[in-house]
Length: 472
Image 1 (tube, one colour):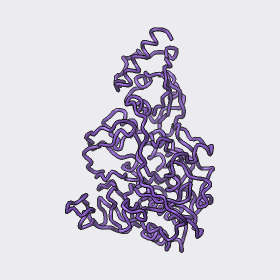
Image 2: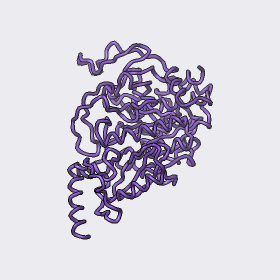
Image 3: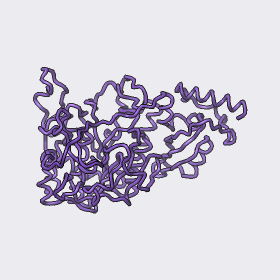
Image 4: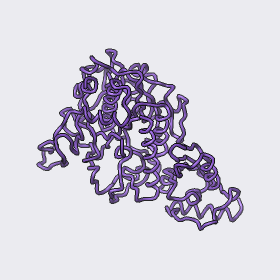
């Protein structure tokens, strides 16, 4: 490597580590492609363009900035690109591009993201332990309808086991894809689970077969698609989620289940350059999916935070050393707090908000069974690659809501996504704010519920109701 390029590579690598790439080059200072350097690593970037930008124009701009286009979604003006040149972010513009990989390297982080659920290993076969299904009246609903095969729920998660006997009939391999490069990959190896049972557990809650064995899902008659958006380190980076939403839209899925928040920020803040890119790209993808009649259902999170006024975020970045920071009104949990997304909180078997569940007036649309982490049987039993397992979290509540939405869509096949979301809200069983929310008996309220009986910060419009979904 010529000395000039070697010096430039060292300088740019130092800038990357210091987080100092938010400085624009003077007009006309962009180098030609021939001056691109390749010191590595080859990092992945999310790039936002004007929504009228053609694929050819987007690719030309990425190439000029020393990058390679992995995929471009012209419907929303968002690309995923890679580049080994540390000047790529500066050349494209820090207001338009973001790399979670670059942030991870700059923070010298190699840690694995902690799973947001609690798992317990049951022994032997279990039956009659699905208190969660009883709570939402699923068994009674199944006597009327178990859902239609024309309804497809995309499970945007860590992959779904295609060999599980309770899921074989429901899973649609031809609609499944992996999104870990930002571009859909339909090969089975790209969408099967590798390091996590999370997606298989979620899938079983939605559509496990009603065959008298194992567990039964909320809507065992519908189909599911495995859309893998969780990498082997447990991260859901924005390019994965964008790919997932766009794939679901292209395949005309009915609903997507999103039991996650998008890394590396619990709250993604539009006032920050890189986070603004994340927010805009994900918003566009969700809006496009909605326009294609795909309803997005998403978990509120397990941080016991009031999403309407969180104040501070002490979890982010998840791929580095977390730093406590103030959170302003431009910050939101993605995708749960986006417009046209159904945000779901979690309740215990008693119908009371689970202590871990986040909440917030205007952020929660409905609630569903997520379980109580204090006891094994208090969690939700569902499918995992090794058989069946218990898990707790808003991750478990969300597929109950998605399953009820699938029953509504089966009963009302011509309903569009926006109307389907409204119908999901309308059928919910009203839950008023609890008079006392002292979960540990200390005499201190663990959270404060605001709003009124029909709509409040803990439960939104109320508890999802499978029976109402097939009768009203």
